[in-house]
Image 1 (cartoon, rainbow, N blue to C red):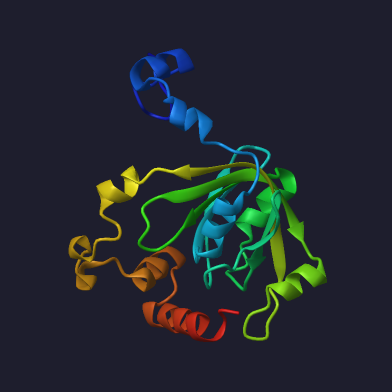
Image 2 (spheres, helix red, strand yellow; image 1 turned 90 degrees about the vertical axis):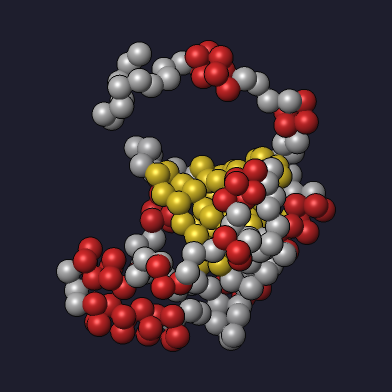
Length: 209
């Protein structure tokens, strides 16, 4: 076995990988479609949250959450959708990646539903005022949009959500035991915790749109 990034035993070929994992069933092989059909459009219309995956031309990857009211992603037609870019931290990781590498993956989630919708394709940064106007919320247009030309769509099974019990409140940890975002940010940024708390409060209450 070869070694990679400090791991002693790794898989080096797809043949070896398949010998362990096996091959997908006919259902899995046939479930991928190349356009947004009525089922995909309905799913997206009910989704308030998705994760965007991108990589730059050197292969450095990023996953970024996007959330808003259900249906915030605008479906233009069976091959195109657009995601509004609301005010954020201005790191613009996804958009910087798209400028050098347009490949993109989307994972749409509906609260309480354990299956997810995956969409893959090519992305562009959109500044079309007519399209941005359609995604206005609380009187404010998004700053830009991430447009996606759809190449693959498929429903993803519920096993990960079932194993994690993500939607089962009885499995949720006590809030008092959860990590503190402000403490983490304070330690990482070397900014006093109270200042970080004030920054977060201002961002969450005044700069969502």
